[in-house]
Length: 178
Image (cartoon, rainbow, N blue to C red; front, side, top):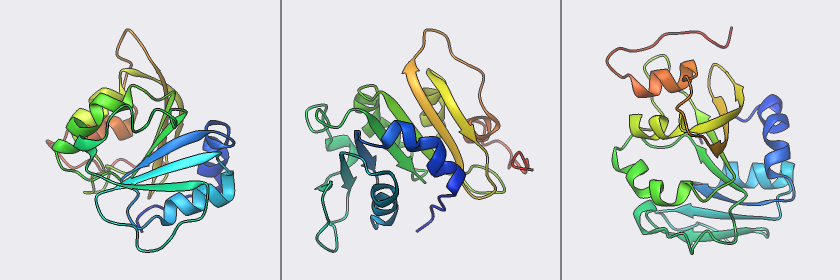
């Protein structure tokens, strides 16, 4: 598991998750999904991943095996309070599969890093992020958190994390977490 969820990250996302219904896109081994569920007690989480779940999951986690491109607005209709993207892959088609559904969510929660030669997400995903209100940004050496709200008419300025995710022409060694 790549995600290292700090107390500050949990505290920051708490009001967007606790008692609400959301989707964990790319749930992977489901450890982060289970950590969020145990600590923040959402009403329900739909965990979506292309690989099958390895074991039965306790409520309120519901698992759906699917590629992002196969996820429809109807699939997420009952889970639109928040979307979680923890350490998304760097494949260019990831956002293409998500762009039809991400706009359905009140809040998008991203956790990953684009510094020090690593990358979590594709540039078009971060371009999309700039079209949403930035509710919270918690920089961290291993996992920076972005909490994104409603769509806005004008593109906002990028955080250092988003800038590094958009411009891959050079490796960003920026230590914004210091």
